Amino acid sequence: MTARLHLVDQRTEAMPVILEVSALSKRFSTNGIAPVGVLQDICFSVRRGEMICFLGRSGCGKSTLLKILAGFIRSSSGAVQLNGRPVGRPGPDRCVVFQEDALFPWLTVKENIAFGLKGRKLSRRVRDREVDRFIGLVGLDGFADYLPQAISGGMKQRVSLARVLILQPEVLLMDEPFAALDAQTREEMQNLLLDLWKKFSYTVLFVTHDVNEAVLLADRIILMDKNPGRIREDISIDLPRPRHKGSERYFERCRAMMTKVNQV
Image 1 (spheres, helix red, strand yellow):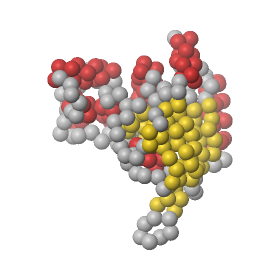
Image 2 (cartoon, one colour):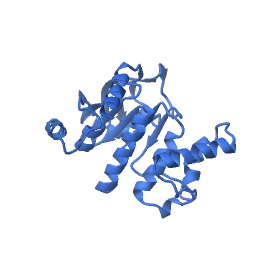
Image 3 (tube, helix red, strand yellow):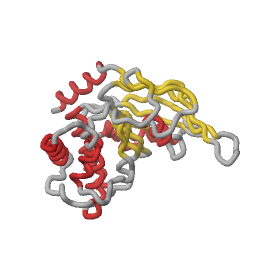
Image 4 (cartoon, one colour):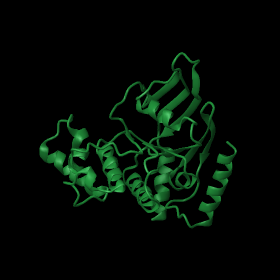
């Protein structure tokens, strides 16, 4: 198993760059107050199939950066390119999973997952088959006809994950998606994300303030500073996969990363 995962890592290193962020800055101005810099001179690139975590204290602009990458808001300067094309608005090539599940409460699990496929020219049979497949992939067999109010927080996040992955986005953007979950459910969701990532080689950009989570998940950790938000360090995590939270190397990496965070 470990050998196979090493091959996945090597393949990722050989993959082309699909996302490039160049000299990106964002300033906000409200009520006539002078513009406040939220992000400054953000530059990084992402290879296809990479798992990158953005780590930093509250207020360093992690979520703002993700919203710019998603096309929800525009940068004040700089550029974002996906596969060589400018990113200026939301699109199905970039899907977001938020901390809050954002499900439609009047739709069932199956209907929520199928929602994004409505604009695609798929037969009812093909659509239902795909939805059933993703219900199985995220471990929700038997819950297809449940409404969101009838399932747990962790299950709602499974639905949220399936709803975006079924669209096969180029980049999956995740904004602290597991932060509101209890410790056991959070670990289950981390393992589920890793399993799906290894199976399908998704490109994932993941915002977190949790050092342990970042070290567990990431190929690279982009450590951010604040006032204004900027990249302090881009750090490769060279731990072999699968990673074990009880290993000494994992603890060493977490301690070293915590030291860096405390210096921000």
